[in-house]
Amino acid sequence: MFAALAVDGTTVNSLDEDSTIELIFDADTEFRCSACGADLVETPGGFDDDNGEPDCPAYQSDEPDADGTGPHSPERVALSWCNSAGIRTNETDDAITLSLSTGDPRGAFTITIRRVPDGADSPLAGRLLLHLPHPGEPMPHDVLHPLHPGTFVIGRPAPATRTHLTAA
Image (cartoon, rainbow, N blue to C red; front, side, top):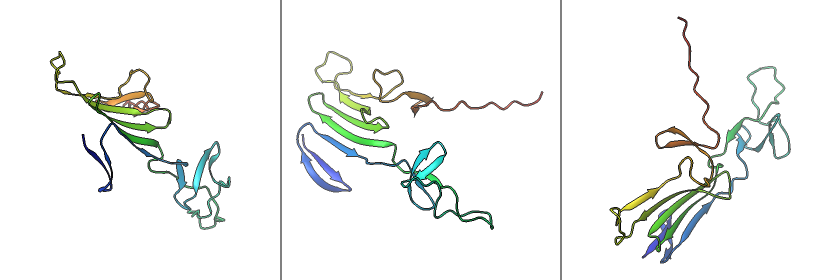
């Protein structure tokens, strides 16, 4: 087998046997202030910057008589939820596995496609099989809660929708 690794369209390395390629994200912070750009830490009282300051130096108040101080305006940092993403090829199993680690760095959600050997005593001989994460799988990376067919909420379940009652 011949495989080539390309990054942004440029070939980086040729691969000729079982290989693992991994992209590791170094997201030290989950929140950043949209006003001043400081990395923020969530605290019981709100959000503090790296110096432990809850006040934002770029705070803009809507009040004309305000003293110019106020809280940071937190926004989530894009991709801060991801630890790593990877591709693993395995010629022995005739399989490719994609992995994505979210939150817990000790594991990952994996999606595997493998071919059933042509000589297998099975009606699936020569066919491709897709293995996906699913609720109830043994040793999942994180709990999956079905939202609708093919879509899951990872971790905490989605809040229950509220039913509006009308007067009779």
